Length: 587
Image (cartoon, rainbow, N blue to C red; front, side, top):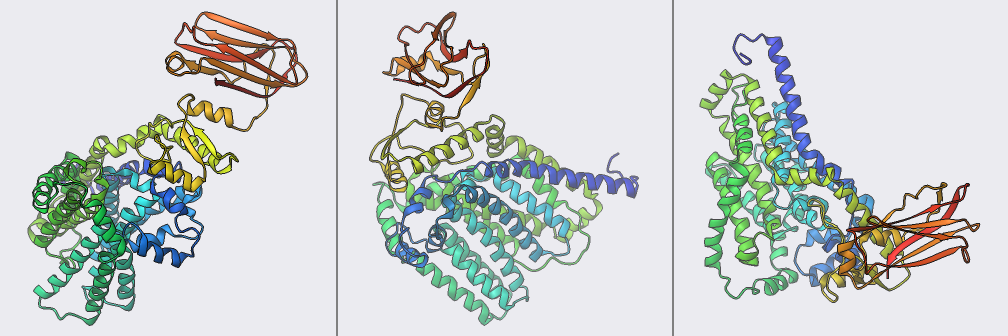
């Protein structure tokens, strides 16, 4: 048997090392697509455009102050990120670096937290850190948050800071108080509480629980602890009483005439159980949690003192429940799915709590006795099996790999980057841009508003300083080809150029334009042949003379007989022909 007592020590060590490596590789295979997609990220999604120009004329600190006074919410810490001088988050390099920094930040934060809990078990701490990170990216309610700067600063950045704050608290309340822990905790609280209302409540409850734990143990409350509590209250007051907070509550909390607190309390309880079952009770999750529970301990030394199991369990339920309560009360029961990003903080903290709970239970004397009799390979095998199951059932992971393998992510990235560059550099004010091909599920992109005068239209006009509307008569591929710099190319004798233009019959019949226009610019009066294939019907047009280096030809497509028309140009000259440009478009 693989894990029998007769297995020799050397063989057992090899198996243990192999399983550990496989766990790391499997966890990285879950995390990898989101890192890869970060290299394809493009700025300008949703609110990023707004913050790209809002208060741009003001200094960094003035911008934060004016946002706090007249902005749409009281998230003062979020304003710090959105008022960065020069708005680097609207640059390609920043958009592709920031998500990777966030993913690495979460891993380092989790590692810091487990190091505070039990420094001696550093190998298992790495496994636990990979487990939580992989679990988070696999099931986070809105995976776009990593690649959307405005959303990341509200939901992901505070998560990183919260991990370090929690690690600080565990060290601080375990008699390891120092000036560094106190000051860094106050700074971390400033950013966490001021980032989002959900994070504000989570942080306050966390602080309250640590204080409650000290009171129940009849420990003396240090003045440093009171200082931390004092600043937490100050930061919370700054959020609650901000002019923007009142403005947002007045605008959104009355948007549904039948909303009331009793209904929110009831529906929050109903809705919270479905994601709990989905996230924590699927086969993959249970296998991973069971593996952590069965992990043999190297020592019988008691685990460092932190929040008791009962309080951890109550906190787990409260965190999930509160997230749903906020969403249901503010956006109504009908829109809860759309605003799922709102309980991303609750999901993250609940995931952290449940693993801490399992880790805490695993140090119970009875569990320790059982785990010490088990081979470590058993727990590693359980965790590995859990990772494999999560890989195949996680919608986030499957969509991310689909976006990569299909090429849709790279294609849409190229289109978005090109259009944004075109809007920035085009001298004209009124522009028509075709609609993007929306096929990716992981990355958020800038998009053109379908309706003139709405919020998205206003954002585009304000940021690019252009009047941009949709043009349904041309595809995005044709638009880019038509407006790209005219790069010369060479035709070999009798061979079609790589520029083969295709038009589908369904599209041609659905647009008012019934003519295809072909423009070719070539030097030295070559003999060119334009070929138009309509199924078996092939039309060739020979041009023996080019007027002012340009050929202009219109082809009527009202009588199209096949499903698709192909257009390309060849040369009858024996020597290569140099083409300055070729443009094909509908008219």
